Length: 244
Image (cartoon, rainbow, N blue to C red; front, side, top):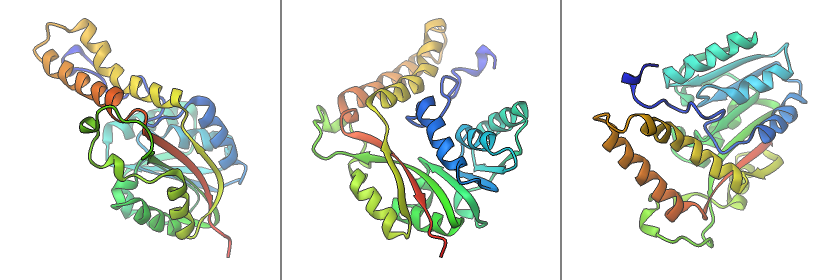
């Protein structure tokens, strides 16, 4: 990337989610313990968690689908470098119809219209007896919000943790492991997201684009720190589809 390209995209992130390396490795260990033949990541981005699962089950194959071609290219390069049998295809999540032993879907429920619609669709994609790792946003209606006007309208519509698990059970899944991102993971995610802009601004203050990028960074940071920080959460549910 040259200076003319402007700030990078997600270059300070291992995952496009509030997910630490330690939690990611623990999740990958649990999913790999099921000895899947194939792993599917819907809305994969660059598919780092997908790659970590397949690393633990070398005989398995992996497929990541997304519509962001630059992120898919990042995933392809990582898979090749690590010698993994993982492919990345430019496909919309709701166009995927084949089953897999392990399915990953993190932060992509919007592609299906709603959380309940996503879980209903994903139930048919998980092979009977298989696993789904589902990551989605949460909202705590009892948490203090300094500036409600800074909260995006759709965030208060997110479920509580209990509500999210209930929706998964209603879709037919059984909850095998329930966990939420820690405050440190959430802060690290926001900081890494903003780092693309902030690091670039340090060395490009005279760039014609600097004022616009600075305004975007300041706006996002205000919404985070004065708006949704205390009330927004993120869950990771390891779900099982009954074998029969």
